[in-house]
Structure formats: C-alpha cells, structure tokens
Amino acid sequence: ERGLKDALYVTRNVVEDGKVLWGGGAVQQTLAIRLRRYAEKVGGKDQLAIEAFADALESIPRILAENAGMDSVDAIVRLRKEHSEGRISYGIDPIAGDIADMAKLNVVDTYRAVRNALAAATETATLIIKTDDIISAKPYEKEEKKEKKGEEEEKEFGKGSEF
Image (cartoon, one colour):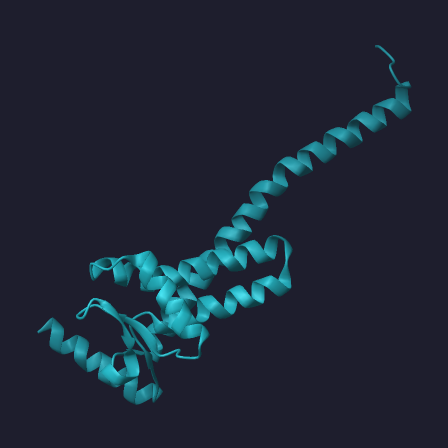
C-alpha cells in the first residue's frame, strides 16, 4: 500500500513539474564538479566552504557506489572522468555494480525531490556557517573589549600605573 502511494506521489510530481533529472548521483556529481570550478575563482574562506559543499554533494554517488559493493574511490574517479568529458548523465548503476549512462537505463529522479534535498542541504550548510561565525565572533568581541578597557585605563592612570 505504501509503495503504491509513493508511486502515485512520484507520478504526480513528475506531471506537475514536467521535469526529471538523471538518477544514480549524476546530478550531484555534476553540481560537485561545477562548484569546485567555481570555488577556484572565489578563494579564501568561501572557497573552503564551497569545496566542502561539493564534497557533501559527491557523497551521494560515493554512498551509492559503496552500497552497490563497488570500490567507491574508483567509482568516483571514473564518474568524474565521464562528467569532465561532457557525459553528465553518467551515474552509479547499483544493479550492474558499475557506472553507466542513466539516460540509456532510464534511471531518473524527480526534479522536486532533488530540488528539495538540495534546498535542505543548502539551508543546513548556511545555518552551520552562520552559527560558526557567531561562535567565532564572540571571543573576538570579548578580546576587543579587553583591549579597549586596557587602553582606557592607560589613558586615565598612565602606563604601568599602580593603584
């Protein structure tokens, strides 16, 4: 019963959206490659955050490969090669235990499912970065206040003065 409901929801989403994306981690691999290229242009702390997000996206095909009993490192290297040569529909085929063209196999993900997963991942990453910025800013503010207080005391009492 649940499987039937899931199938109906998937069908509804495809009909409403009118779009599907290649499955098997193909979309995530493409996004990871493009984000890494973009990160090279950005530099600094932002580059590290973008690369970390790309690594997280690439974990999808890596996990698919592991679950299919494949050598995940080898699978990702081969998948990167296919994608860098423009074959962006290549993904993990868990049945064959290999990488394959998802277009030929008709393996797809719904646009809505991928979009929602990416939105949730992006929101989570943004929240983590903002939280990290807040946490790392607090000690800095305290240190800044201590320095100002020390400077004010020097002005008021002179350097090295004792009470």
